Length: 197
Image 1 (tube, rainbow, N blue to C red):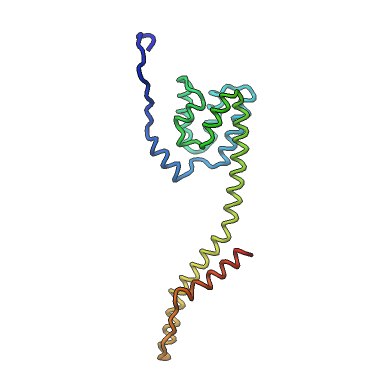
Image 2 (image 1 turned 90 degrees about the vertical axis):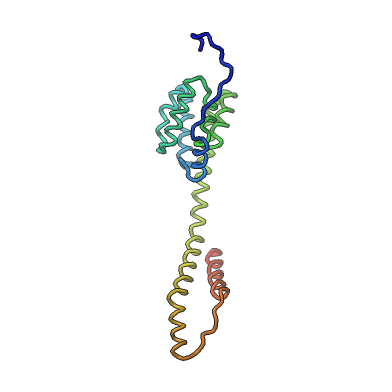
């Protein structure tokens, strides 16, 4: 533009497939929290060692295995080469990265302590990953109980109940009606006792 002696009047960034990326980010996680924690911690250590941000991002761009994230980091590198800040480049592709990453990167750039902010974010994401792991382990047993109760109810309704009907029919008797509550309450009691234990 300077060589042609032109003056930019307006600059608009073209965001290709931004809404699609955001939808995919909601439905599927491009990279888990532990991978992001390792990435932020590694970035902090590289910056502390004096490696420039562009080179550090380039070294870590393929550490996360997701191809979507790898392409986003390539775009971030191009934005930085074009003159954008690290936080600004992350915000341009915010659908892929964790929500706190561009915000804390911006705070670190303004305070001059980007490596400290990345280390704090890495520690926070590691704690969240550990909490999510414990939560999944805690919910696994009740989930097994629910699925087991549903399977037992289905087996009873499909295989046991017809044989009981056949037995009553051979004796020319009418089977007493089994309501849904009669089947649901025992299963609910078993689930509550198992969850309490």
